Length: 220
Ligand SMILES: N[C@@H](CCC(=O)N[C@@H](CS)C(=O)NCC(=O)O)C(=O)O
Image (tube, rainbow, N blue to C red; front, top):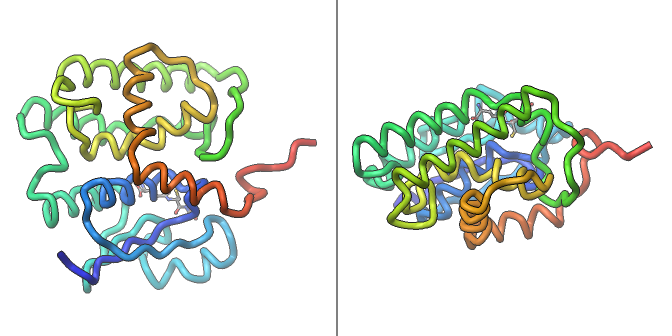
């Protein structure tokens, strides 16, 4: 395993994209050094350029190789360290896992805007606009269908933990934070994600980070 593996992430309380790459590495036991930059601060913008041309987190450094963007990192980690275990072994399940991961990566803008990641928040959401309501319904369908069709081998979307679960973990946190109503099966899936030891660690550290006014404006 490469000792030179470094993952640059943003604040744990707010950086949903960082969580995806970080959780994948930690849950599969791939050792890495973590560099954390405080999101949306002058320090972030002063330092991020030395790690990635894209100016965003997460970014993975493997020696001289730089990989940025969460889904690209997941594919790289899968190929380099997991021998393909990041995706389900069966072709149909793998196709579904790739599709829902890409769907998450490319979409759900309304949900992300209405329910921004704030790990330590515990308060119901305000009424959602139609687009966000549709996004929530779509996520719930994705979870139900993956569990029903492919989840029999374990508590995660495709049985064992994989890239698709890492991609949806921040949505689990959002649903928990904002008390989004879900069915019993979806709740069981959320509980499985929330019980992961690395995720507990992420949340414990998130709880100690400074409050950022940009993400948590004071109520008037
Ligand atoms: N598509 C990218 C999105 C990365 C992203 O937007 N990261 C946010 C933090 S969660 C960021 O770096 N924001 C800083 C900025 O845009 O200035 C991915 O999947 O990694």
